[in-house]
Length: 131
Image (cartoon, rainbow, N blue to C red):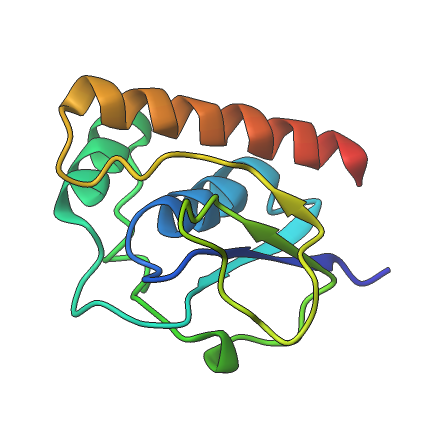
């Protein structure tokens, strides 16, 4: 049976959606394939996210080939999850299956970043149980 494909979407695809992609691959790759994308891109993934994911989980998102991508650059997915865009989520050509409503930790303290990372981890583990 082919694994379902899950996309984690936010506007810039540089922080929360990248964390979700990395944790999806790390915690649930046996159950679903994880992708992330946005309607705009950034030159690089948020460096605080890269550093903290390396410290907490030993995951090097950049070395694993993650980079900021547009929705058009990922395969068609079975499930699309919004990270919580605060200003209105991007249109991706279909409705979102879920909105995780997470605040963007960009520019905030490591403590705030870690709270968001841990919320994403919990949601990935919940999602894993759904499949």
